[in-house]
Structures are given as structure tokens and as C-alpha cells.
Amino acid sequence: MEEKRCALVTGGSRGIGRAIAVALAKAGHPVMINYSGNIDAAEEAAMLCATADDMDLPVFIEQTDVSDESSAIKLIQSAEEKLGHLDILVNNAGITKDGLILNMKTEDFQSVLDINLKGTFFCCREAAKYMMKRRFGRIINMASIVGLRGNAGQVNYSASKAAVIGLTKSLAKELASRKITVNAIAPGYIDTDMTKAMSEKALEATLKAIPLRRAGRPEEVGALAAFLASEEASYITGQVIGIDGGMGA
Ligand code: NAP
Image (cartoon, rainbow, N blue to C red; front, side, top):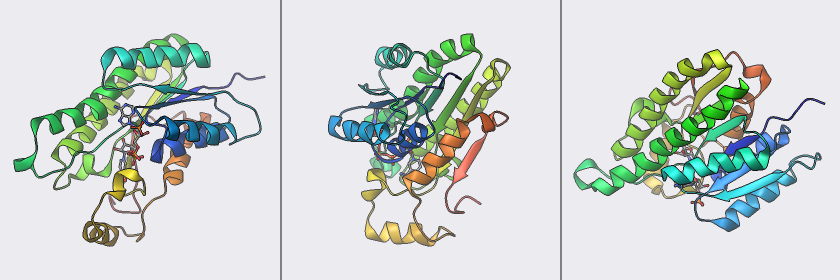
């Protein structure tokens, strides 16, 4: 029997990450779900993964703040040990701390960069060591439409996501010879806890700007990630795939 490809999803306990973890489990991948603080959500996500297929695949949860270098390294090592091998890394953990630049505190700029960008870098660097030896890997980084187009009130967040896109493209070039693909997903407006904080007025304006006239569903991003992780996607690397209802077209 062919060996199963194993996956780690950072920030896999809620929202888009949870949907990605479930989609990967449905596709037959043993999964580790990382979270930062909310254990109830992580356990719920693990339960959904465990019941996503009838193959009785293992599911693990691991609490780690990916912005802390030594913790991020330990997370990857733990995924290697518990799953047996880490083949698919989804760098999805992310936060926002919005505000117009004149009011933005330096620590709010820094913490967004630390989690969204440095966390992605730490996990990619450690996972690449194992993937390079095995000559296989799928790395999927969560960017955003605002990393491509910008958004008032999000200089920190959009800078972090633009940087994730640069990191993705460079890393794809570095790792291609080892059959490791590296791609970014750039969602538009997806209905999760992150976007629930929006005011009614801002939500109305956002929906008007979406040609498909609705928010995206986390499961739609999950399906895209599962495809990028699949054998069928082996010739796709260094790409930024938009999933935004036409907003970025
Ligand atoms: P969400 O619902 O707020 O979930 C965030 C997830 O990240 C949670 O599982 C959270 O775990 C985890 N997390 C936060 N800080 C972490 C840290 N330091 N270390 C490890 N895990 C951490 O967010 P979402 O909307 O699903 O967004 C997921 C990703 O998609 C993010 O990178 C976001 O920037 C990106 N994105 C979202 C949208 C959208 O419209 N929703 C659009 C474009 C891009 P805890 O609950 O334990 O804290």
C-alpha cells in the first residue's frame, strides 16, 4: 500500500485552518492541528478530522505560538515524530491588528509581522530540512488579497501578507529541484471569526466589491488547499492562487 502523506496545519483549530485540516483528512492525510490558545476549538477541529473519513487516520493537536522561534522548531519536530514524516505544511496561522497608520502602535505592527511572516519563515525553514532529505514536499502559505492590493487600516497585515508572497516565490525556486512545491493562497473575504469583527457598514461595502456578491466559505479554501497538496498539483509551484469571488480579478 502507498504510504500516506502527512500534514501539519498551523492555526488549524478555527476558521480557514480548520476547514483545511478537515479537507486534508477527508483526502486521506493524517493531520496535526496547531493552535495558540483555544484548546476547546482545537479539540473540536480534531474530532471533525477524525470523523472526516472512515479510514481511522490519526489526528494530533499541538499548542504552539508559531512566532516563537524555538517553539516553531519544536512544532515541526513534533509533527515529524508523531506523524512519522511531515510531507504537507500549511502555514495558515495569522492575526490582524487593524488601525490607521497614525494610530498604529509599533507593537501592533510587530506582532502581526511576527506571527504572519516570521512564524511562516520558522516553520518553512525547519520543515524544508526534512522535505529536502525525502525529496518531496508541499508547502502552502496563507497570504491574502490585501497582500496584493493593500487595504486602508491594514498596513501591518498587508505588509506581512505581501512578504509571505515574496517568501513563497523565492522558496519555490530554492526547493523545486527537490520536488517540493511552494504556493500561496490569497483569499478575499472569507466568513470566519477574523472577519466577524467588521462593522455592518464595512461589511456592506466589502460585499459590494465582490463580483460574486457573497463571502467565501472556509470549506472553499479547504478544497483549494487539498488540491494544492495533491499529486495532481505537482507541476504548480511559486504561484499565488486567489480565492476571492472575483474581487482581485
Ligand atoms: P481565525 O478564524 O482568526 O483563526 C486563526 C487561527 O490561527 C486559530 O486557529 C488560532 O488559534 C491560530 N493562531 C493565531 N495566532 C497564532 C499563533 N501565534 N500561533 C499559532 N496559531 C495561531 O482566522 P481565519 O480567518 O481562519 O484566517 C486564517 C488565515 O487566513 C490567516 O493567515 C489569515 O490572515 C488568512 N486570511 C483570512 C481571510 C478571511 O477573510 N478570513 C482573508 C485572507 C486571508 P487560537 O484560536 O488557539 O488562537
